[in-house]
Image (cartoon, rainbow, N blue to C red; front, side, top):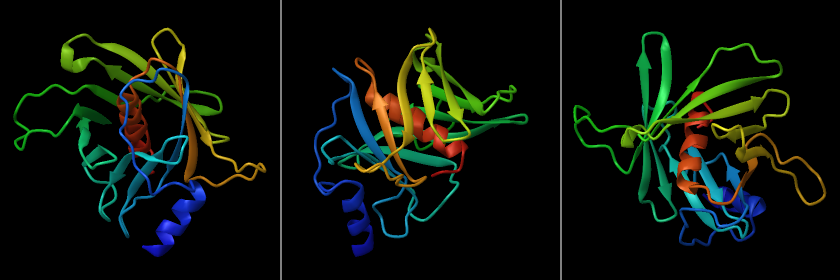
Length: 208
């Protein structure tokens, strides 16, 4: 556990603080994604704001590739429950706001669905995002991944980039590795929703 705290301090010196997460961005904001859980021997990821304070986290308690994953705020309150689904040969992840009812037979609509497309894309891959499913007002986003540098961007249905992830570098330009990412989110964007999409994207790629 001490090793985890020490490493976390290198990712962000003030990483042991916490704060109240604001749902929508009022300006462009930058976050650090550390693809590690705060729980000893756990699987998941931890998200820090630009001040090094914990904003979001995912903890899978040493159980990788689960069918149900929770995105939580800094207090451990569930913001989204992600469920792995399959239809014929297609596998995808659906995100539900807050905890899912104990019985999955309750017909609660997902807020979003993320699936990998199999279109030929030079130098990368594309993921389809369906949103607004819980309000019966569907619209789409797209996640595009660059295979060469592990960067990815989330675009809305007009093609405007709303969030972008790339490997984080130290102030002197040293790459911090595959498990430390910088995420830039544009203004007027639902942060928890973007984080839900990012978590689903990483679950598809077995990063969490």
